[in-house]
Length: 82
Image (cartoon, rainbow, N blue to C red; front, side, top):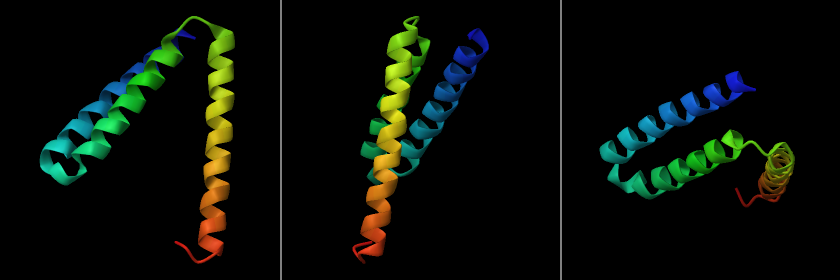
């Protein structure tokens, strides 16, 4: 489990640095970069916690959120909205 936590922490740090660079280079995208950095930070905190049940519930909620968003995207694409 330590290896996974280290990988998640490294990923959060790398993507966080990329988001900061993007926010500096493109001020119009700064709000999105800040939101994404906050999301990554929250993900890092959740994966770093020692509570396995909370981690499992969070992973399942995120998985179903991704499935729902993919379904919404497909419906919007099929309906001609996107």
